Image (spheres, rainbow, N blue to C red):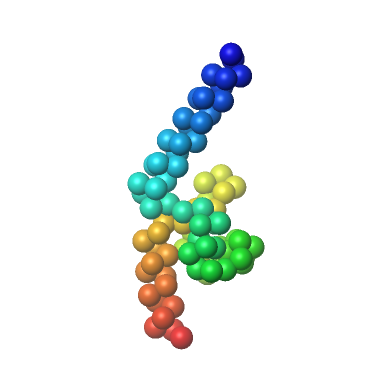
Length: 79
């Protein structure tokens, strides 16, 4: 039962953190890759080089949807 209660607590924590991220429009690299139709590795590379607007939480890259939308608008003007 301890394992069951631990996995229930972990599931609740994961769901809660996903809800909070969605509420604030925070995306993970794989979601940005889908949005921009790029490979996951390309998103990480662009993040490390400062090309994409991104921030880190610990060792994990995160992206604000609003920042990415503004970045995409600016990219249209550059091309």
